[in-house]
Length: 74
Image (cartoon, rainbow, N blue to C red; front, side, top):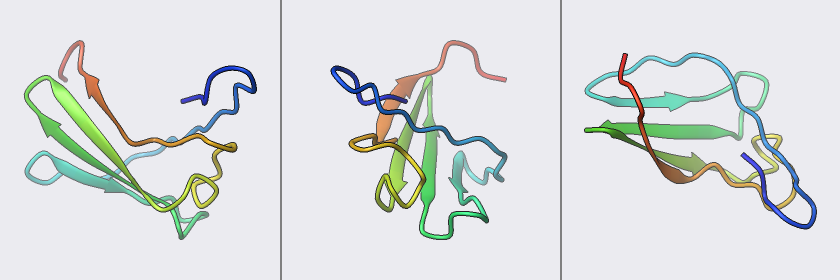
């Protein structure tokens, strides 16, 4: 994820989380104020950021909340 012009601040999250009924919450243990909720519906995934960008270690203005289209489900 990045904020875009002119600063191109970035945010990165990586790890695994359990899925139950197409829903999952990613909570990195090293950032207790950060959580990302994932909802998989059809060919899309909706990501909701629970907490601020700084709680998740993201750069200024970077937010993870978004709806993405999946190219290939596994």
